[in-house]
Length: 415
Image 1: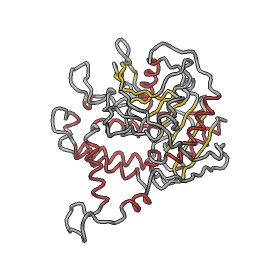
Image 2: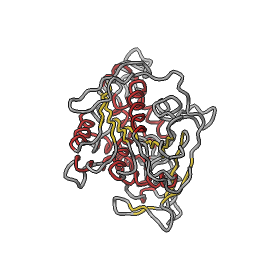
Image 3: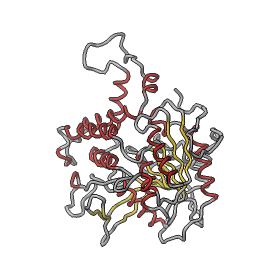
Image 4: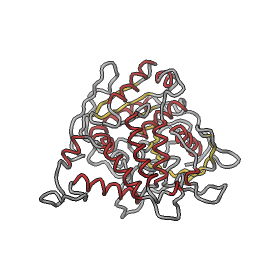
């Protein structure tokens, strides 16, 4: 299957407002975001700390982030992208001219694309607890001079969002045009609208949920147990020793299965054997799908930290937007943003019904909400692949948001 084919998508749910007949086309002349560089800022610096939802505090906190485009004089064109579990701040472009790795959402960020960097100032930061420049388990604990390991405090999506709000303070951006994210990033975008109702005009929540489901928690727990069962995990204090690569690889393999649909697996692999005419009658990887999962798992260990996987999946599992509230509608009642909620028909990790629950709760409190269900066979990974089905919808939503946006007075900080 070609992930860049031009297909049409369907949007339909009775009782929800819709964007209409948005042309599902992409500009063939859309450009690259070009060369970008990671930047770092320190927040919650002494004498301040960040109070975490679990009761502990943390600080100072280093935040790694990247920006694309230019912030307008009125500071009214900033879009904050929240990444998913295995993502990072590098959302688009390249770090070096010969860099083979494009940013993870390069298909949507750049000149002429959905997040048009000639119109919008796009920001993406590595999350708290991550392993790509933002403070996490592999960072040095200033109290001990050693890496945190599992002495790092348990974090939540709310904590992750609080850190990024502090980043916006440093950048002098009091109010965003929009927040956007898929999967865990969608959870963070929703949490931002609840925690900081006056700080974003729009929310684009994609392939996500208002709370982590029991099945998704189960898959994450199996992955965590695989890591902790690795003899090299050493209770989380493996830095300076052999890394728990096998455990992390298995965790990634488990997670990767949830990202694909049955149709995608069938069309991509079927029961094809790997360079064999018959079964080997051993426990080696006879099938192409086995070899694929082994490769994906081991490749992941080259760029991700096992402890970060533990902490971030736990944050995802703890996510429940209605926690402490009478209902999801009550949790969303005080939000002031306009919402675009986007699901994918074959998504097994966050099926459309979970997105429709968000839409129903928003409509119950008379919020401006549009719902769009994309017909796709790619499963949960659709939000990373279906450029031509997503781009027109996101572009239209951002343009209409910009037309109704009134920025707050700018705070201090620099970009």
